[in-house]
Amino acid sequence: MEERVIQKNHKLVINNRKTSMVTGVMDVLSFDLNEVLLETEQGMLMVKGSDLHVNRLSLEKGEVDLSGNIDSVAYSDVQSHGKSQENLFAKLFR
Image 1 (cartoon, one colour):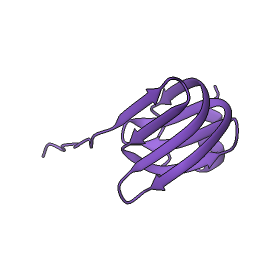
Image 2: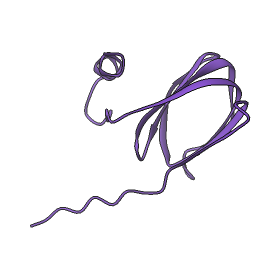
Image 3: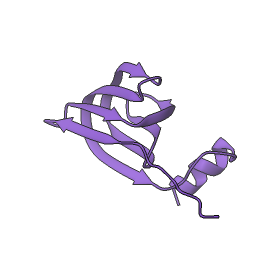
């Protein structure tokens, strides 16, 4: 029997490196003024910058609005299902 994986929509919109809107968010793993780590439908998403704030969070809709100075955005295929947070972070920063 063939197994089908249905991926939901995921969108990342960045305006002038100051604000961003992310859809397809499944979980917010951590956030502070310099870094936000999100689990999305397309893998882990790390947003780095300064003075970052989570302005709106709706996990029911899978949406997050961020503001601040965005310096970088990076994706990783590491999934957190069934793994400890320590292993997740170790794999992200290899």
